[in-house]
Length: 104
Image (cartoon, rainbow, N blue to C red; front, side, top):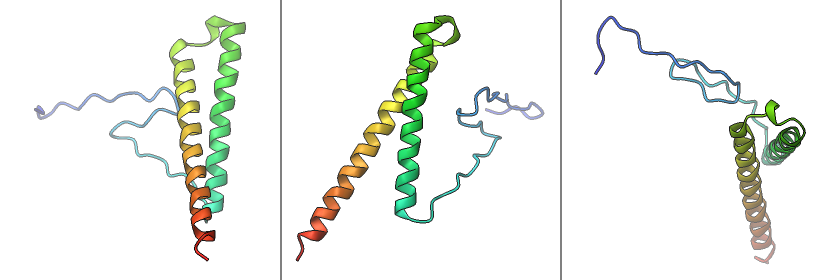
């Protein structure tokens, strides 16, 4: 129930990776022109997630106070999820290629 004359509370976006709030639009990503470009860009994203998790893990061991536990957990989840999705996409592409080549 909204009360007239009162502005809704705005949630601050404290990290650039966090989703924007209701009043802040998403910035569009530059899309690849073709499937090959999209696949390569996706694999580069997976690699960056893996490297981010690795760097945070090393920092957590070397200097535990410099890394928040939830940031490390989020980085691990992002790395695992993106790798799993990439593996599934590659498996499906390989299966589609096999299906196409066996139609002769």
